[in-house]
Image 1: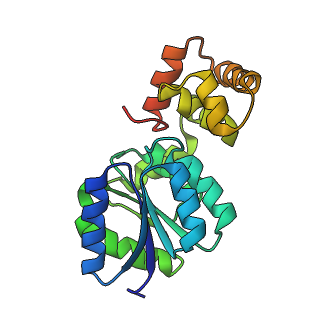
Image 2: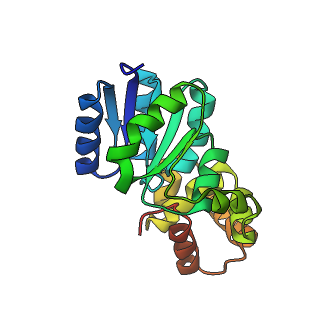
Image 3: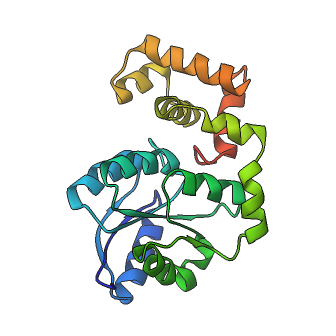
Length: 213
């Protein structure tokens, strides 16, 4: 089991280096790394790892959106979210997105090996730093989270890129769609979330882990 092929995704090179050293010291095989969500999708299809360890907040495509695509592209691959978000609502959405594990960066050294071994056996892993009762309660989370869950993948992509400061024209180019289509998605997102300004939209995306603060 410990020769499992691992792919790491995080937008901080030092974090990637530290995780790679940690995992290789435990006998795992780190086959590749990625620093944004779009590269993650490409690299994952090329290397077809057994486990992908990914952050939630990544540029171009956040971890939640990437996970949903990865489960369609590589349904047998196990996804473990390694993040700073110690919030049961994030954990619930991570599992809903197809994750098999959720733990915090501050406990990676002590928990990551166990998490990998558990998910490879077909079990789920949730860090004990998030109380089980809080996780259960997150199933009936706030209306904001429910609204976020109602967005399509394309709407989430547009929302994230807007929050990262990209113009409508830049988003159209990045997603290979027309400017009018981007504007349509932006308007739909604002309507569904009940948000009326781009600044408020950016704040919402940051608060929900769709863009880095």
